[in-house]
Image (cartoon, rainbow, N blue to C red; front, side, top):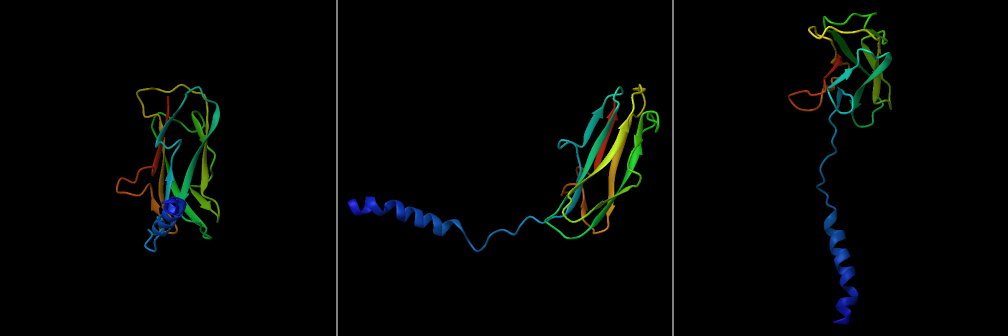
Length: 154
């Protein structure tokens, strides 16, 4: 009986050790995609009184890579906002280049204080269009969530 008590913990540990690892492990998650979000959301608001620069990050989700990848996007402005009065796009191009080791890149918009007409479309939408490596746009799945970020000036 003493012998069993003495070696029981060792036997249990050995049994767990032998069964905890297997050769048939699942392959790593290696989908490659781009998405845009703010605090895990696809839409945000900014005050009509704001006088600030908003930073909206595009994220590349991929295993570590040595490739340089360029993603293109478009900015769709609602009829209630005017550039130079309500906002100013600070990025000069409609593409972002992700160098090796870089996994997020900013799109910056300078917001200017100016009242908005609530009856109009006071949104700016940043829509990811494509990339030069064929990675998916938006989160995996048919809905392609987080392929568009909607910013509403209120």
